[in-house]
View 1 (cartoon, rainbow, N blue to C red):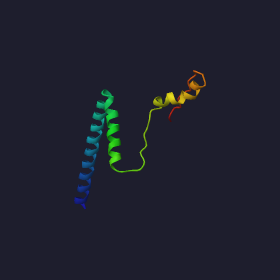
View 2: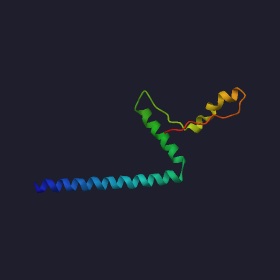
View 3: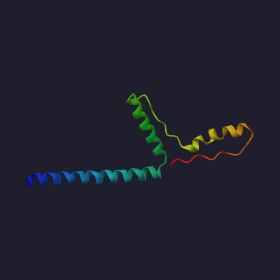
View 4: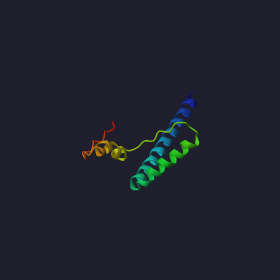
Length: 91
């Protein structure tokens, strides 16, 4: 019974060390991405490449609403009005 408790103790320690190491690596990645904004775009493209290799039939492309602002304002621009619509905010 004591040996089983020791094994569980070691397993929990190993698991905690793994979690700590993973959190350190995520913090380092956040620093790199924060200092080099292009890295986030490259990671996004790499993820799309990996998804495409899995032969899934549906891929959802998240787009920033700022990118769509021109299309949202298109009807008012075509009607001669120059009042831009406000971009909806995501929750």
